[in-house]
Image 1 (spheres, rainbow, N blue to C red):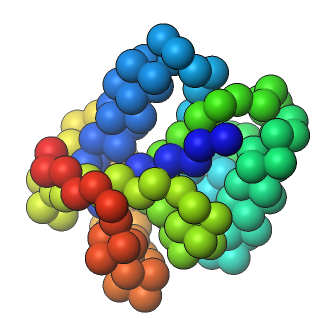
Image 2: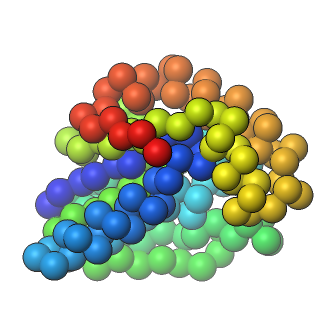
Length: 163
C-alpha cells in the first residue's frame, strides 16, 4: 500500500497534480484521492486536531488494507453529512493544505510540496471559488502559514515543485 501526500499553500495546484498523478498511476494500480476540503470542519476548525485524527484513521485503514469510511464536510450546510466509502486501493493520495502533516509523514507517505507565492495563490482561489470568500481566505492564509511553520511541512517534503 502506497501513501502519497500533496501539500502546499492555497491555490498552488494540489488538486490538479493529484488528478494528474492518479490518472498516470491508475494504468497499473488502483488509486483513490481524498481531498482535505472534504475533511476540514469548516473554516475555523480546519487545521486542527480533528483533521489530524481523521488523517490518522484514514492512513491506518489504508495501510492495513481496510475499507476507508468518512463523512464529507458540506460547505453549504456547514456540517458533515455524506458518507464517503473507499475500497482498499494500491495508492492513496491525500491532497490539500494539511495533507502532508507530521502524522502522515511518520506513516511513510511520500510528500510532494507545491511552491507558490501567497498572493498568487489567493488570487487563483478567489478567481476559482469567488470573491465572496475573500475575508475567509485572508484568515485562512494566516492559519495555513502558522500550520506550515509549526509542522515544517515544506522542509520535510521529498519532492518540491513550483507551480
